[in-house]
Length: 166
Image 1 (cartoon, one colour):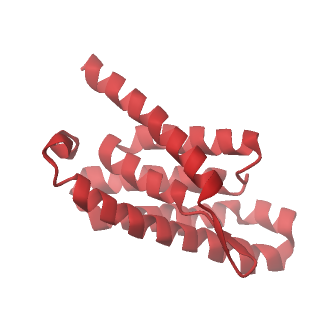
Image 2 (cartoon, helix red, strand yellow; image 1 turned 180 degrees about the vertical axis):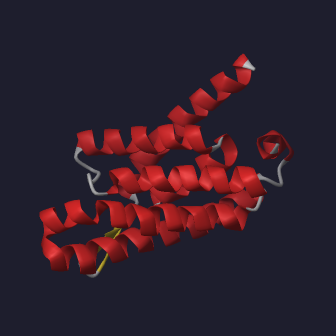
Image 3 (cartoon, one colour; image 1 turned 90 degrees about the vertical axis):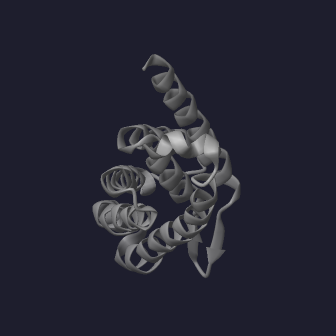
């Protein structure tokens, strides 16, 4: 049992580092909106492989570190955590990868955006929140889920990842 906890702790730290570094360099703009799919990809992978509470820890650490570094946005902080938990719960209860992806889209792309909307409205103004923040938040989640889904389809077929599927 202790070795599984240690493995999950190490993987949580690794996923947090990947989310921090990857999210800092993999963002792109579509018009005035900033799209950053890496955190959503990492939410999906950590939620599926480690479960909801480890994924929550990963999302919290990644968001905290990125905000402290100045490469993140406080607006993504609660959304990522909702998404990570939804992914883990959806996958653990059904073992269906597409439901885990849907969990990220709903948890981050919809609920997280709604939760963060008042702060976005205060920081960006009503138009900025509605036309920049919410579409980019959902688009980031969608791109991350599509990439993460493909990655997990390959990983979960490998023998060494079968223990994560239990």
